[in-house]
Image 1 (cartoon, one colour):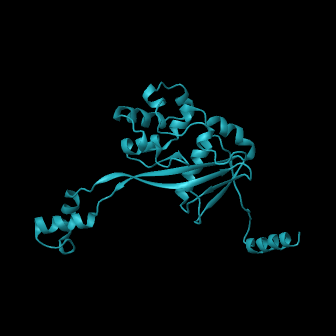
Image 2: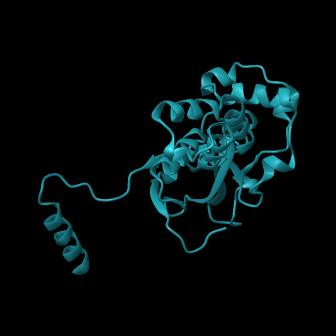
Image 3: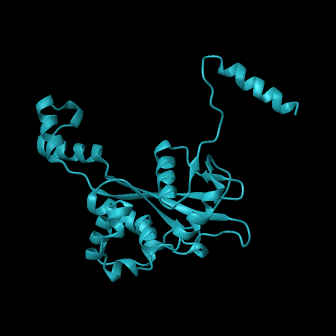
Length: 234
């Protein structure tokens, strides 16, 4: 699950461990942040969404599918805030689904240390067809010439007539939550993906704190060198 790659590192408040561990047993919360819910949101609302699966079951949501009606209900439920979810009635099929991680044992990756592993899944609703080739085919069929040689009005007509194929596309990235050292490791260089993971962890009760040096003013290179020099001579 974890290997050589580009990893983002964010800080983690160690004293939020008990809240995080307790929330892993909250069935209503865990299904709301799950990949099962995120995939339902993307398919039914046609928007990007991030969900999680346990480290040992990266595609758990696909192993235990739910009905279309339950998917629609789950997509609605996942879009509610925590207060609204607590007062919302959800069907047994949704709450008793097996396609999401629940309990600390599903996420713990060490027998004694507070280490947790999970897969963050970014779901995008996007065009998966090659629109350029569709445009060319339509241009030859309807106007008997390559697309780039069409008059501007003809290009506009072709663009309006063709339709691509849209689908939910998923990308998974491993996440290590280390309450022992107070760090979260995310295998991604995408700011959007990192922010999505942080939002999920915060919903689960993990308190994220910034790591790094904060400098004011234009002389920050000199301040960095001074810090490094001081650290070297400690």
